[in-house]
Length: 364
Image (cartoon, rainbow, N blue to C red; front, side):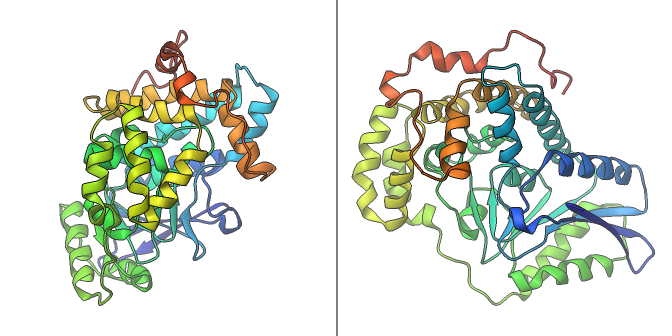
C-alpha cells in the first residue's frame, strides 16, 4: 500500500492515528490514490472521539515527499494536449480539496518533514497544524524548473512570509533548510531525525485532556528542549539584505537585473540564479502574479484560483515540455513557448486567472 495507516493506543486508552507515506522508490510522491486514501481515513478519524491526534511521516531516509505524481499528469497532457483533460481536472480538484481540509482539520496533525519536502508533498506538509523539520530537511517549491508554478496553496503561504523571500523562493526554487523554514513560518518545531519515534512515544504517554492542540504543543516543546543538535544557519537571513534589495518589488525586469548582481555573493544564490535562468519564462510571470493576487485572499479563494491556473498549465504546453525535459527524457533542454518573459503578452498571463466553466472547488 502506498499509505499505511495504524492506530496507536495511549496510556489512557485513547488513540493516535498514524499515517505513513509508503512509496520510498518514488520519494513518496503524492499520487491520486494516496490523496483518496488519506482523505477517507482522515474523515473517518475526525468522527471518532478516541482519536486524539494524527501523526504523519514517511518511509525512507531521503524524503518526506518529493512532490506529486507527475508521470500520470504528463501522460494525460500528452493524450489531451489542449484539453479538456479529465484526469488533470480531477487530480487537481481532489488534491487541492484534500489539502484545504488538512489545513482546517479539527484535530492536531503532526507532520515530520525530514529530507526533501517538495511541491505537492510540501503542500501537504505546510497545511498541518504541527510541522516538524530536522537537520536533513530540504524544502522547496521547484515548479519553475518544469513550467508549472508553486501550487497546492503555495500562493497563500508565499504571500504571507516576507514578500521578498516569497518572490525569491517562488522564482528560484531554492532549497530551504530547517532554520529557513522556521523563520519563514513554513514550519513550527526543529527536532533531530533520530527523535521521530520519541514524538510518537510521548504522544502515546499522554493523559488526554480537552485541548488536544495545547497538549501536542507541550509535547513538542519538551522534545525540542531535549535536542542537542544546533540549528543550521538560515540562508535567508544570511542573505536578507541582498534579497530585500533584489526582490522588494514585483517588476521582473528590476528583479532580474538585481538577481544577477547578487548571485556572486553566495553559492546558494549562484545556484538559485542558474535555476531561475533555466526556468520557464511564463512561470516567472505567474509566480509574481499569484503572490500579488493572494496577499489579500483567504485560503479557499486561493485554492480556487490555483485550480484554474493548473488546468491552464496542462493545456498550454510548458508544463508538459518541462516534465518531458526534466523527468521523462532527462535531456534538460526544455523548449518553452516563449524564450523570454519580455515576449509574453500581458493578457496571456491574465488569462490564467479566469475560467469560463464551473470550478469544482466553488463550494469551498
